[in-house]
Amino acid sequence: MNILRLAFELFVLYILYKVIFDFIVPIYRTTKQMKGKMNDLQSRMYEQQQQAARAQQQPTVPKSPEKRSSNEDYIEYEEIK
Image 1 (spheres, rainbow, N blue to C red):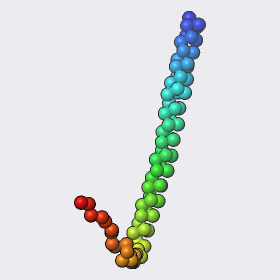
Image 2: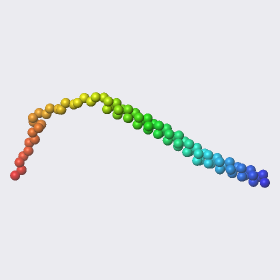
Image 3: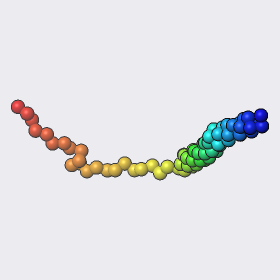
Image 4: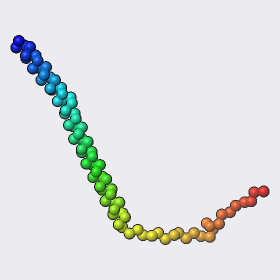
């Protein structure tokens, strides 16, 4: 009778061990890793938004149109008969 009880308790302990280390621990690690990646992604997005806001606040210097010579405006062509 004691041997059966001991075998049953060992079996239950083995099942608990397998559930904890094959199921719960990997889920915990994955969750922790995903939280870290999400925080990293959010901080990058925040930095990009700040850079975009700074870029919009800075006055843009209007570029003067480049002056072309009259030779560039004229396109030569040949008549086809």
